[in-house]
Image (tube, rainbow, N blue to C red; front, side):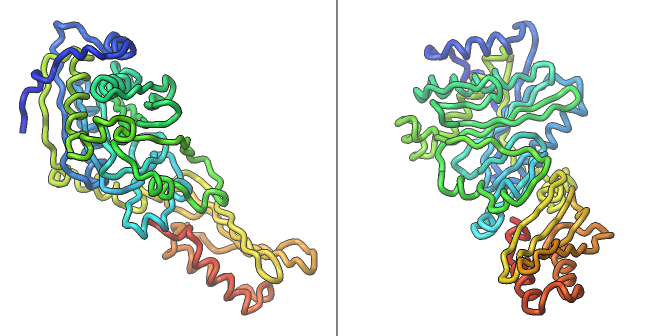
Length: 388
């Protein structure tokens, strides 16, 4: 459904000075006819919403040079979303995610891992690259929080995250394309801090080394905890809608747009137009397998000595794998047993684990039968094999 949102344009007396600076950065000549589409996505499926955003971005890139500005607003079912260059094993607790039916997704932009649920509002500013301005975008959001909810929000000028005091209220990530770019961010309306912390705490972090981008953790806060009015609106279910309308209106004014249309978008129905993209986003090869090169080196203490595992992987392939046993009694160098990975199996429970277990029993003389069985049980129970 489309309708004009010019009626939402009004000057807000409590706009902060930082917002005025943002207007100066983004303002265009009144003679320039600039229109904005404000997409309000009704789907709560993380994969479908990511696919909708990426498909729209590709359309804009292919239409270059296009002056179209797009705002996107959506919420996700519980999930952890990691950046395009992050390690899926170190950024989330896959066993906990699987237990609570929480999906792990990988987005196309950079940045760190975030926890989403229906208490979080996602916002995307998609613009021609020549006017891509994350700082001004974040200032628009901060100004709305101040004017509408009396929240004294400030924007980090380096990462463009929004803070109140030392606590993060909104985190940002970006993607640049040929002629087009987007800045998307989270906005915590409310927060289950216990689940968020647990979901983003991997038990594998100490045993994995790699070149992937690591998340920068910060204490978080939420709109409803900072503003009595925000808490009231959250309680009656209107906070998200109010913020979407206010942010759209403030952004339209900031870029001096001539018109704006609201679009109610069903991302799940729209996905019929790009099934290959949706399949990619949902696949293990993208969510886990797109992880940059890393090594996994856990250690197991046995009665007679130390058993250690070495896995080196990149993308969907295991490059090297071995295990070793150091006999504490004879003070000799550890015995190292390479595991055959010529076909570069994926580092998964289905593909790599059977190769490892087979090698325990075929290399006699290093482990006793009882020790091989203990190593088998330890290897099989490693949280590394868990995926969500």
